Length: 514
Image 1 (cartoon, rainbow, N blue to C red):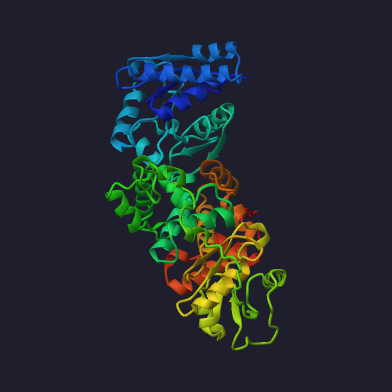
Image 2: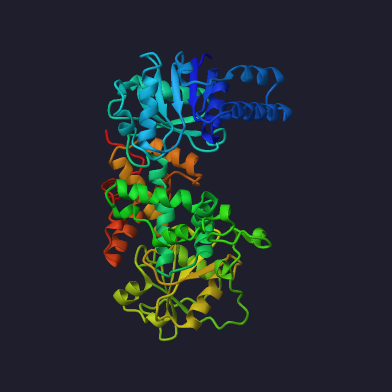
């Protein structure tokens, strides 16, 4: 198979440039490496060659293949030496004026048919192209690090990009063995835009004193299936990377409340508490605590209670509880004495399972004794989760909370207890993720399919955001958001029209109109 581009120039030979060069060479193109820093291109060539040597040693490629790949690579010492390329990809510093200057220079060197592409992750493709005489042949081409392992690439046409330019980059991506997704030129493109809900909502939960970092991480991993909790992820990425992205997307969308950053990360960034790279973040990565870093080192993250003679009162379940029949079946299996009267007795433990409400609002509205009322999150089927989450309200008696924890831990499933919050933890975070993704579709930033593909491959989510919403039900996500907005009065939680209409009609969130 012939590569869609035969001669590719790579400007900038850091980690991203090296990865792109490796994959492009493997796709069959000849690669010319250029870097303004002396010897940087040669070091990159040697590093890429070393990667192929290691693949050969492991039996992943033959010696002939490794030699062929190496023959595809060369270094150039002057940018003018890229004149014969039919594609030049830039992977340099994220500064608009620097990128504009580079491409303006390239435009005077390469042929008129040469495609120019930027690997920017945060700048406007249209803004970079504004300095060009021929912006039709210019596009965004955003890879993720490490390039050989991160199998998704965002192709971003600017306002004046020719359709053929984008299609050639889509074809090249496929030839590299990666998955192309196409996005309009908007802040954050697909992946960095869709990823706003996970960390920012978790930070908001901490900021309200609902729970701590370790507990929230444990809940989202065990209830939803995320590989890393939001605070583990921010520690891995580093707040010097993640917080500026939060700020950038928020400001570029003119302070859209859905993307509002947190003072928590701003303060930690200012104090140099960045995560793994500084050995101190939301977790302690210094010796001898390294083994505990990023794990449930805090007892509050586990919060399991063993029923060791705790007096468990009779249980009464709200008729408005989410998944009420499943909840009753679960309580029966756990050996609870269930009251069936229309109202709870004076001694009963009252269990509520609200969607989007807090326990306080639920108890007041349904006229239960708040001192004996405890909530459980059942947005997701209990059988599909590895952890249960129960929630008190400010008036809940300690003995009632302890009894509820002991009861729900009887079968050995871990329990986490949190303070009162509209939407618990999982409801809030899933709803934020799904709502942002829905609004991206409403804005036609990308197709629903490309959005789910990009996020699952680019962020490692257990499913795409829209599929996640479908799994719990679009109507349920909509109910959570509407109720949360009522409790908080914050436009952050207003439902996207995409979600509102599909939830009301019972349609898949991946459904597109005829």
